[in-house]
Image (spheres, rainbow, N blue to C red):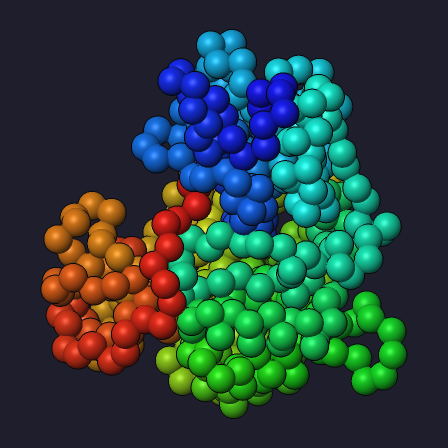
Length: 480
């Protein structure tokens, strides 16, 4: 930021004229991070900045919104920061900010290893993004990390913040932050704090406001959404099943999704709410992590493989055409061949539509990371991972083949990434369908007949346009 008296959103051009400063946001990690990036983008635009066109490295402000869940997250961050350092040496007015989970966890290390960063702020400082960048522009580098326990509802859930959504027809809605679980592999409780549930009236009011703007699809976000409300005092407490029903009842909302539930808290009332609320999509992401009871116990997951399958069977019995996806970790410390075989057995019986499969990698600060003597050999993990992928790919293929000949309701997401002549839409089961069509606006509701099954998506033919989008066209947030 230039150190003069011009507004934060302006920069001086070579011709002496003022022009809006530009920004770019590179987002890493989960949907919570993507939603935070939308808030940051909205704040920057409210401060007068505009999204950069073309190469994002030419932006005047670059925000790296980080994640510490994925493997080598810190290496990826410092790789980006190293490249940006040389750019900043060429353009001293450029500003760099590091936000998100890794900033929350490693703020001192970031400041030490990358002194050229202007602002470092954590997961609970999103509402201060523009202010911190302005402060850094006048007073030098700034670091601000808040703890979730000191936040009021208005700070924890900054629903009043301006937002710049990537898709005008769809929106993330945070219902809960933090996590009270103690999974041995997970760093989330350390960086996002304990569970704090948002008042139900606030959630519903936000969804009503979104619907008034033309949003037709919302995804409810939380680290463990189906424990929503249990931290709040008073009777009756707001719980997840009534929240699902209330959000589905908002006029104008066609689709409701949520992520992610925890199997130990996935109960009959949530299944009933899904089955009885037409707007709730027939898709359930239910992380398994392992099929071995011994490994699940070591992970502190709170359920067994058999109990997981029972809950899955109950959901499928109540919900016609339910698609189920999951997360599975391979090579958790101490995992034996027999225990991994249990995972293969449960995965095969579960018949997942797809799965996010991960090779275990230690996260400093977690219980499992300390179990160095029990780390599984990387070659063994690789072989197990390949075997698991065979099981998952088989069930994915069968699930997709079963949809050939069906008429699917899809929401248009835009042209295919690999072929601009092909339109891509998403079904209620969260499956991508590629089909030929005349130009259709993003958010259009259409019916498509599935003609062919692929490994990761479906092919189809347009049958009918059901409804035009209600939102104004928006330019997506830059996402890495």
